[in-house]
Image (cartoon, rainbow, N blue to C red; front, side, top):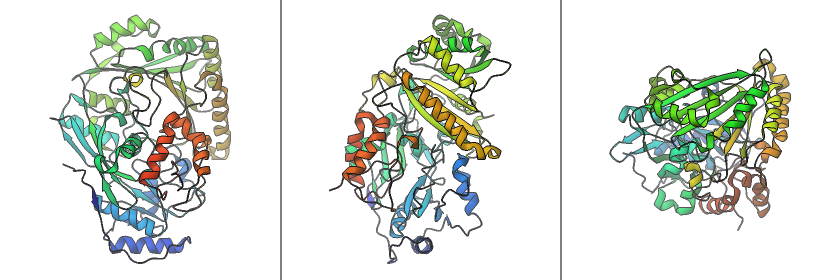
Length: 525
């Protein structure tokens, strides 16, 4: 069992002089790591460096040659290793980037801005999962993927589950730090809502549990965004009870613009209002085929087929759902199904899935979009490059929790979220700006139909278009202007919770050791 015991590690550091040159930090970090017993790291001259760096870069935009590369990639094997790496990075004047799965939409876990020398701490070897079926809890190291957690749960107890997302290679650390919406969130809320405890490594190398980090910091780290508070070594989760067999389906529908618009329009009055046991999302890709537009519905019901059929026939007869469309399986089998995997065992494979060049954005919808405007939206999509929108239903438990319970504020009043995406191939990189430009234009077009004052966004769908910090050093000083500037985009992710996040940041990391392009700045004293 992992125990969240607060400890301070005293290290025998070399006396190194901070510097901003590229050669000196390379020498400093190497010497510091070796002298403190950390052997598992790679430098730019190492044969393994490129493979290791690229192994968890999911968005190929951030693997291009012009993107700044880290001075080192370190893979800690233990909590002690992790503490030593944090202190060595600071001693070597390196900015710190922490990567658990590499799915950051803007690459913030393995890139930096303004050519600041930096190191990547990759948590891939900190991936241990320990399930306690009797108490329905799990201790999970931050480098574990969702798939590794799901597999461990399935091996332990077929009637237990965790409220997480569908992509099996997403890292636990980043997912939970941003809130963590998933297929059973309408029943059991977010991943971050189900955190019971955690072990946080602060800038001084202290390992803090829930009691020793304090209420504000424990509140902030559950949905306040990654890369802000320190490095979470491990999380303690509440697992939830689900039926031994649940119902899943994926329905594809194709037709003229008006037909697809009719289905999307009706879904707005169904998806967010279904019983909590239901998740029914909409996916609409761009483009047309023979003049027709396509869409798909992804469904998961925590109950048998007859329950799913009965409810959906009554609430959404336009789906023309047939019993043959539905499958019953265990919850862990459903996680493999929705991840596009052939078997449950594949959940443990960290290298599954195709990587691509992409850009994403997000929105929240609080009032149904009219049929006339839905037709216009589908028409706009049908003329786009390779991209999509996905509509995820809220309601249920998502609407019953207070918006201040954790930093994630998008609760009551939100019908659904929209994720926008566009992607392209390597051969099309000369036109990347055109693809991104189309997505931004579509996002601007959607402004009348989504939340306002501010126009909200989901921090797990990071979007640097909303604004960025401008740190010039590895650990930068801050000012009142930094907070004012960050509030302009921070309120879009966190609404009224932003100011409490600033207070938590000031408490845990007043020196701004853990920062990135959209991190929370501390107050200046």
